[in-house]
Image (cartoon, rainbow, N blue to C red; front, side):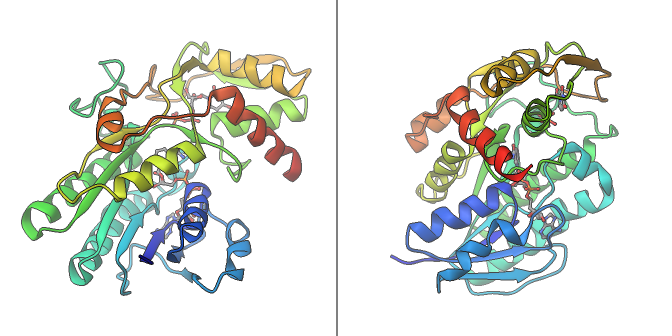
Length: 311
Ligand code: NAD
Ligand code: UDP
């Protein structure tokens, strides 16, 4: 059945791939974006489809449209972008969620929230399971993002409890792939761009902190599967690749895959930078029948090709 689907943040890295995937599945897709970190170039190629529309709008303002499903992805995701205007980041998560939940309630749409592994903060249990409440500094420089996303989860669950809105909560772990913004300061984009230019690779701290990197295609498969689960399953559910790497290992892998002459340099660790992160994906395996299929090196290759094409 062809569904009408709204994707907020549709011009961003994940949103643009999601719009493409949903269109390919035969749905009618509307991208809503204020182009803070996303770009029209990410989605302009989709306009050749009569089933695709783009709307410039800010989710902090109310919006009305008749749709069957809403994927709420609008929110800057990289530390430098979400800290650029911290108050706006909180408003985007909180007021954006209120506006989109109000819309979902009014038109009886199902709504998915792009939450994050950041709700676990600098986690004290490892790997992270969904029942872990997290270890977040509420007044730190990352709190505009972390607490905004935590409040969004609370809004979602309460619209569900109080108003029977059909919700889905996905906790996304670090995801990478083509169309990442080369300027957004995230580790994969930084390292690949630095390696391709044979510039120093900037490791923050001693490089022993870990992250688990999921390729965009795997992530979106999990996200769409979650949206299509029965209404009784709402999550939250971790979606990410459990393969865990130190930042130093990542740097060495990128240097090898790009045949780069770059050297590693060490810079101070940003405030509240989590020391470890790895999703426990047992719940996703059980409820979504999902697990990642693309190993880090296999995902890095097309990502490197993408960055070669744009720099
Ligand atoms: P992105 O910055 O590329 O995309 C976010 C999009 O939202 C951009 O197109 C931006 O212009 C838009 N946007 C921001 N504020 C808005 C507003 N007020 N109104 C309308 N549009 C607005 O980031 P991404 O990596 O594609 O992340 C998408 C979502 O997934 C975000 O909600 C992010 O928090 C979440 N997430 C991503 C990751 C990851 O590793 N990429 C990890 C965890 C969670
Ligand atoms: N990082 C780094 N060098 C960089 C960019 C990031 O060492 O040029 C580190 C950063 O300190 C963090 C990890 O890589 O420990 C992941 O950073 P990113 O901003 O990509 O994601 P997040 O911290 O939100 O998981």
